[in-house]
Image (tube, rainbow over all chains, first blue to last red; front, top):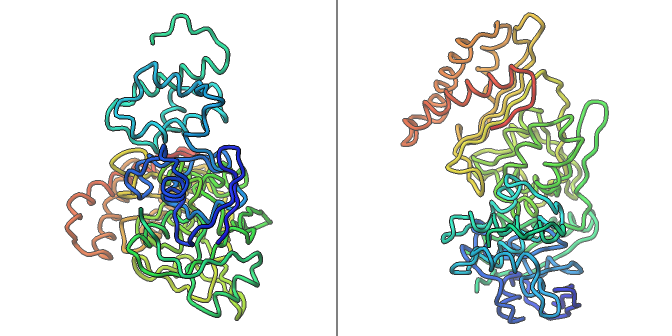
Length: 162
Length: 287
């Protein structure tokens, strides 16, 4: 069936099979392999993408279900080659180690910062609790979100530990 | 790449159209898909009926009841002001489902028809004597939630029926508590959930108690014997301890002595005691 939706701010029109999951459409048909599949069961959050700005697991949605809606993947975060402040912060604090969870974590982070530009540590922990990371112990990830938050809000970052 | 074998995918725009499909053939209704897609990963062929365009995401209030559309997401219910005012335990329970990603997609209707013994929202809904509105070409039928689930993952819903909405009775109690126990805070399949609504008079005696549990009985259930035991009693710490012991007796009576019982005995007793203590303080609390 024909599927029309907006992907990373561009209109996409593509033929898909009824049982195709969104993650498979992204990775196999559209070659957007930034979105990772971890558990495939909605528990690890590695496959997180934004659907109309809200984080969802792309392994638990059929491609057919995003008709006329807006999907953002990790490939859609940078603008004209410039990394999103959250991406920059992640690389600076060491929040990216093996990197498998990073795309999902970044999309959860961006959704959080769009909704709440100055989240508390507790709010950050809650917002990212659906994304598992087995390398970092999360501390550097939380630091990255706080750094991104300060930069987005134009606060001084001179004294940041980076 | 996991291919789900979808042999038909229908996207009806009206209830009439949806129930016509359901009357014609065996379709699996899909909303968020957080349970349905998991089940289909085994490759079983399926016809899907997407119910996302039926406008079933309403929350309305009248004098006695709150009506919740079956396709309301957990995210929506966790922050809905009508829900938090009149059926607070439902909002708390919805906010504890899975993760943000799951709550953004998963729906309360899905949580009910999936009928898992550890469903988070069902025990909370039972406190409000929830009833389910089921629609089909044959008409409208109301089923009590406490009679809807017959055994783990099985309900009385016919294949030609669609869960339209959930009706909760308003019950203004003096205090509420919802406790969810699991191995961790997030992305957590409940080990046990306890919902309590208490009504306490000025003399500190229990006028009414509503108590339900998930993952304690084969299906989420109210503990009517425990409620009866508490009614009319003066509140003191010993009372809640005794209530915990009685809850354990009820669990063993209805679920048998299972492999998990040595773990669940002290846990259930402790959670019941804590939930009653919290609810007796006259506010809405959760862990």
